[in-house]
Image (cartoon, rainbow over the protein chains, first blue to last red):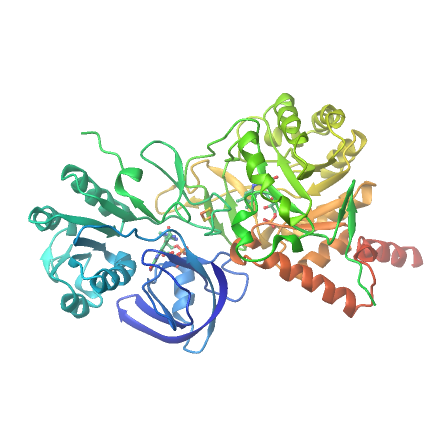
Length: 253
Length: 312
Ligand SMILES: Cc1cc2nc3c(=O)[nH]c(=O)nc-3n(C[C@H](O)[C@H](O)[C@H](O)COP(=O)(O)OP(=O)(O)OC[C@H]3O[C@@H](n4cnc5c(N)ncnc54)[C@H](O)[C@@H]3O)c2cc1C
Ligand SMILES: Cc1cc2nc3c(=O)[nH]c(=O)nc-3n(C[C@H](O)[C@H](O)[C@H](O)COP(=O)(O)O)c2cc1C
Ligand code: FES
């Protein structure tokens, strides 16, 4: 964990409102970890913005983000060569599991950390099925790369403009049916809840990566808590952002 | 020329006037990853109560122009468990100040009683100003008589340094400061957060589950500075100034207004190494202006202003 000044090597728009930002330097992050980025060099906006590690090598850190508000709008304006303040790596990351098969479920910009996880799992020789759902075709990124890397790829859009129409979770039971796989999911919380429910019903191991409003990102401010299945609060930044599904979702069966 | 950065707060001799603000630095361990905590003037740990407190439900924080609102609600493991965490700070050989909170006089006393056994604890910062808990908390800090009674009850329980953390959510902060000074406080620290609120207009509801929260960050600095100026003019005990300090220039302005030391809160969240950077910046300032001791600049803006006025 460190604070680093990192230079922007590449900054490109991949889809509607979605940007890929490549920074110079090694931060030594595992899949599922995140960084806090100072989007402005002035005091406004005041807080750093958390982004998942989209890729990490010995010479670069890549983020994939969607412009949703003030901070991400400012970030999108930072040109190649600009220096950003980055704190990380933060959080626990996805755990390494034993099963040979993995099913990754990405909703919208939740695809960001799963890209890095996918590469890591493939390097370990695992079979990966990738389910990717967005609202509409214009939000899809890196489809060809995903297709070329995985054993099985499914795409859904809510409006039917690409892939199968509907929610990505509708395909999940049939994808899981023929496998002995662990599930890794990142996306909107309604999607994560649906994935967790299917995993619970099928008695499969499932990890979800959560989001919360953050201030410090290091466990000090206690601002980012979510209520766990046991009723106790957990810090998304340090107890997560990755949780076993049963730790943060409960279902009355 | 050697630069003297030391300041005295009650019995404490601090190697420099910079410390993190309570609740913004956990029990220290989180920021130990970024730098050696022994560079700090003091380590101020989070608000600690007699029993464990789960804190408020989420959402607990929201960014606002020039700062943030928080409604953590004093989440802490309780004083017994806190002792273990505090002991881990012993190797830094830096005074540890524990922020003490409670709903009743007895609860404050109970926390102090447990902490009295801890050698690592050098001082107490009595939190009579937390805006985010239902009972007690700020209630002790809004009325001078009630604040004085609490301090008078705690004073005999310890010979360690007793700092009282004041609330800005009052009509007359000077009256509260004077009352706790008379009741035996060794120092006052100010300001705690300003009570505020945010509303999500799309969802037509308050953003924070607690409805209201405490405002901190650059947005509160002018208010905090004014209060430090007024309080330090009215009391004879040291003032620890805070509220919106993000850099050395901010810190120096609090010292010039009358603070003997400063605390840095929310700025740690955006810049985890802000405290050592501020220490270095204060040194630079003193050198640049030919001061030999940081104590020379405490209240200097006020004393020079008084001179100017008398000269007229
Ligand atoms: C651990 C973690 C990893 C993340 N990884 C990524 C990532 O890889 N790519 C990406 O695009 N985004 C990611 N996010 C979300 C990202 O942090 C927010 O989108 C960003 O902070 C919004 O900043 P803003 O100033 O543009 O928006 P604001 O103006 O602050 O807010 C605009 C809208 O975004 C919502 N929002 C703000 N902050 C968050 C947040 N932290 N989480 C969810 N919604 C938020 C607000 O409620 C509001 O509706 C991650 C968040 C967390 C906690
Ligand atoms: C997340 C958070 C938690 C806080 N917790 C406490 C606390 O437990 N006790 C306390 O006395 N003050 C607490 N404060 C107030 C700070 O110590 C400080 O007085 C205030 O934030 C103003 O300083 P700043 O603008 O530098 O943050 C908290 C502030 C924040 C932002
Ligand atoms: S963001 Fe501060 S504790 Fe998680």
